Image (tube, rainbow, N blue to C red; front, side, top):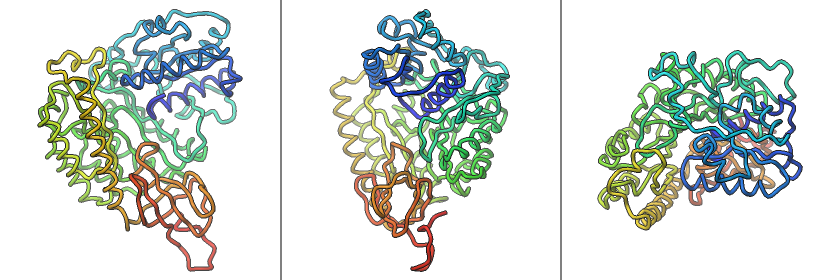
Length: 477
């Protein structure tokens, strides 16, 4: 359930289970159903709980793992006696945990703890001081000599992973946790402090993913712009991206979740000038009113954000930009909403996510004065969502006539294919339909001209790379 970071964690769990002798199968044949839950916001929690309840309707044992399980532990176990609840610390021995579940044993669920306390306050040296399991980082010193086909120690002998999706795109975790203290966010408490993966581990996993047919790497973390700070190099992401782009078989690198306050000009240069790195900026703005942003413990305001976008587009006019925004934060006024509307109209973002504020357990914002009535939050969110839909459609229409590179992901019928351009991230940013006079294959990257749009989605014509009558794939590289 949830985000691409959780998808990576699911593939680690799958790899560890298969290495321990378990077999992945369909739900109807399963002896145990393992649900990797999301615990980010209320809607995601309810979706995860619904999935657990649905799984409990079968004869299979049900196990809850992931963020919701980590965040609530024994409380979740008490509310859902149908499921056994595991912690991140159980991941390293997940095979034995499910063996016990299948044998009818019931372990007491863990008591939640603030996982930020497991690492030193100072970022430098955290990798040598980690206690407890950090999903996606493996266990130092562990080795897995006899692995089933398709399961790899993706970063040296440390992390197991089995792909659950055979498509040409895969998320690749570069870091976990977060050191920021945004007043509305509970993630650092249950995901822990920020911890980078060593570049050699990331590149080794990228090489393994390329061997599995992956062509686009989607770099994920809670805060990608902090990558390397705990390894003593604040510019380590600038150095990592060209190395990943050079991995044989990899055609595109995409970075997610960039903090505007930490986005350095050098990183912008790398992301807009390195062949194989998508000029795609997933910027966490959250609002445009400086007053609201300070209450959120965030940086910036509308004019500063517009100046940052101008810097990006000066280097790469066709760069893609997406961001998410929270409306109805405690103390937000109609004037703050109007300021956000003006920013959205000026910013020309390719993708916009609008979320209504809700209190999260243990966060500073939950105790702030000036809570907005839930009905008013819903109204503001609906109005801004309508505006966002219109603005995104306008931005897509503005791309008509552009030449774009499209990663082909699915054939739709004779001469028609679905894929994504550099400004379109998986699942959230729309798709591009390509018409080609010559056959294309899943995983091809095709040069195409945008000829139309529908909402955020584009229609494009593949460019011929050879004279008529000469066999060739259209604009393929």
